[in-house]
Image (tube, rainbow, N blue to C red; front, side, top):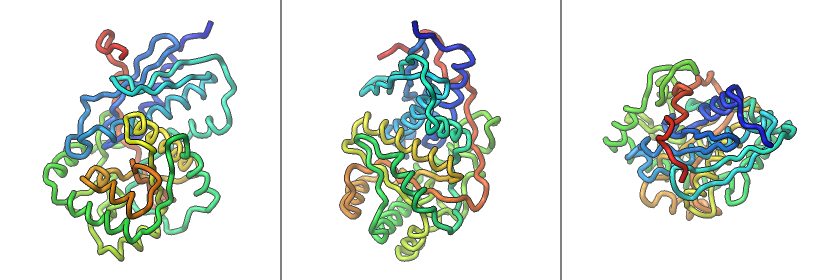
Length: 325
């Protein structure tokens, strides 16, 4: 018989899931546990109507949480089977298996969960070594997900500059972003939202979270700044809920690989929600699939602060309030 989770083991899984990255640090997930089965639930009531009208980023976030959950199970010395779900509140069902030795790679990524940070400031200008860059790309390349180093930075700069000007002038978007900006810091700070200290007045459009004060250099200057960064675009073969979940899971494996190598990063998705932006991106950059996220990474020029987190108790729905679907 396969042993069920103990209270201590359940705490390990909960802490790992709680520290996953999410859109606006909204933490749109819960866990439903029954013996050796753990369902990852999508909290659909967490809605960003202006930033994420279709809920795509919410599913990317759940994909990142799924990677953390799987790594935590492996760190406990257990095998598991992950079954993504195409609809319903359950985005993935994780069934725990028999004891297994934790691979050194999985344990390294699990240890990096607590060190991963969203870094929206500038990086040091020194480039990431080629071998490290290749390791990050390899960590994210899975079935149906393609990790691309973007070319034609002049075209990317043109598109990002346009998107930034649109988002700066979108009052509804700005009100929503302001509402999700928190003022607490650290793992001990309970709550959701983006810590004010995590934002940078010098942030480029590629750093994400466009505000009314975000500078928009001309296209040539922005292209030069992009060339000084390390960028990856995550693309999927399709654009379904399952694709969004897979992209988020792959992105988190890349991010944890980066954290294990003393790198930090941030994710850019806002422009991808503008009408026609993704189609233009595919056309101008000759991408091999549907773009779901842009990831920037490097060595931090300043320390990256952790984000606030909801109390672990809120990860678990009250008995009877959720049914498996």
